[in-house]
Image (cartoon, rainbow, N blue to C red; front, side, top):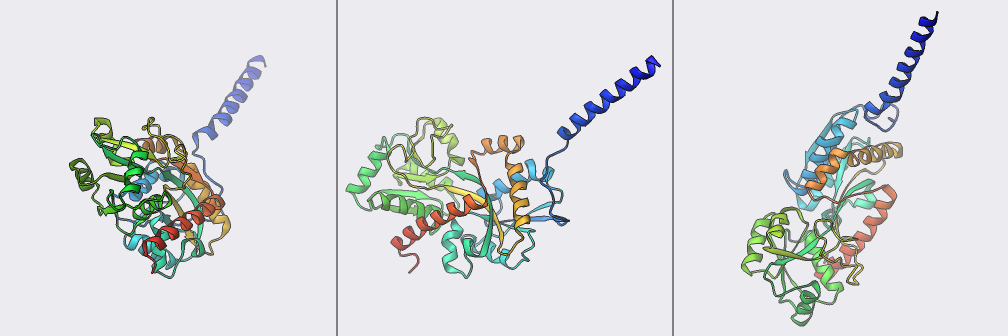
Length: 329
């Protein structure tokens, strides 16, 4: 009898341990909405293969979404016209919550040329990444600080040459908005999808400065061949501890490179909530966070309401810059 009670006690103890440990071994998932999702989820990337948004999305898929999602994840590139092609494609799909549009700043500009608008025609799911922009100068540049650069631009209208990676896109608008707001005029030099050419031009003295995320500049920063003189981040960037923020210098301008997702307007709110929770779990995955750090991605989750308000402010900024540039005439 004594042995039987002992055996029963051990059995209860084992069951208790299993019941405690089992949930920890199962990957957390949001609660499904009825039988949704039952088909593959399609993440539409508004740019080509190998670009920043594509790399972010495929990394998110490989590092966490594939493990968390109960259905397969498909990444579909729909490049062209500053994100307009992807917007039009997503609008052609049913509002069933299976087709997610990648959201990036260029769409707020390109939408002025098409019939669809991000805020009016799409339901916003969430934001995942908010990368800071930096201004880079050559290591031996005469400009020791952003204030030096700004003073030169103010005293020599149009003479300051600043490069970035697109013409008529988000970087173009950001640069013109920044300097316009600070009372200066610069000449913007675009390098279409060829940052290496821009880096060469900067080091050769054909440019005074360059506007970009950290990404491919890490090696040049480490070698001292280039210096970052300001960042748009809310606080100093970990890998650039000596670089001041615009806010530190007294310029409270909301400029950055966001990456998030939305769906066609009319999607069931419960499905949007499900997708938001799914993506939030994915970007909080330790494996993805480690990969994001290696890619110099600033992970910044914003839910639907917060991200929508953020997009409205971004739209105001791009309209201001676009009108000043005559882009929307």
